[in-house]
Length: 270
Image (cartoon, rainbow, N blue to C red; front, side, top):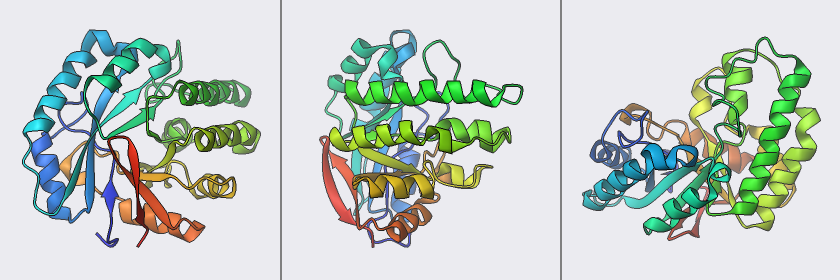
């Protein structure tokens, strides 16, 4: 890794439905890469918490407790909480059940809708797509008010599929007011913004959020950032973290955060 304090704070093991490798393999790879800090954040989708994720969460925590951490690596225990707004009680139980260091708050699908991963917007009008995104920003605002997380994951997740995979160009200008509201709410509630590097390697071709929105967050006074590869296998662990950190530094950010027991530890972007 190029950065002295390179940290990957978003990844998934085989304890997540879409993860390929064991926690043991992931943490060993983090050590091999020379990461300064590594946070494992297996999925906990709250809209399916009772059906399958309560059991998955318990297994993920038990495995984390047994891990042997490579010498020199700062290892932190985390979780990605999805759709907390759709099951607040389940989300609260999940977050409070174990002494996590770090929780990512994510929204993969709005109420009554499928995950953007499965949604085909190529036959939708621009107004229909705008309506979906308005609902997405609004539910993010509701999620920030609800709390229970430390960093907001992959802000522009819908664009990864609508614009990146399906080639439907989204006019973000009509969404700037709502995105500003999201940024201001994060700042007000002292929540971090994640810079997710996974989309550097797909058709979207930029981090989530991208440089323009990161700059706007900075202009509004946002300073809390976390970085994550969103990797689901050892091969992708740490991928794009150096590029994402360099991009943030070029915008003007001097520091970023890792979290221990939900408290930010600020590290220099060097």
